[in-house]
Image 1 (spheres, rainbow, N blue to C red):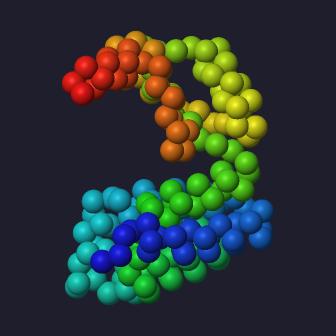
Image 2 (image 1 turned 135 degrees about the vertical axis):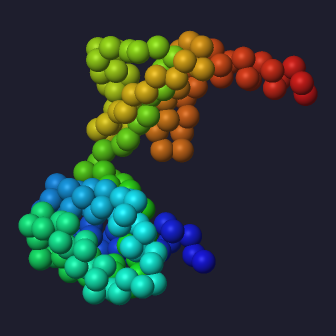
Length: 178
């Protein structure tokens, strides 16, 4: 079976094109967020995998739950996903859509992992430095990981800036065991 991301990509790109044409990025993000929550619900997930539940029943279930929160294009999108047995790909579709949106808006995502809680002034300072380095707007997500012992690790795309005590100890250990 193909990788889920391979299956999800054309749907994410189609949703992105629709959102861009109508300048409706927020609306599509919200619709995909809602669909993601719905298809991951335990009861709905069982229905998606149940051969006794027809496509029409599944479509009615999803659209019934969504109600007026989907516009016409969103409802059509659900119908296509159901018809092609692709509801399972909704979480990946949503993730890819958001990546395309950020790229379109010129925004980079950064994950900042810190050994201790850091205040908003420190986060803002790190974000400013990242924006200067990449010449793009940066949206940061901060998490606390006590296993880092001290310092911060910043992940931007496939780049990792590791200024943690754990990272330095691991590097020292690797150098000593060669």
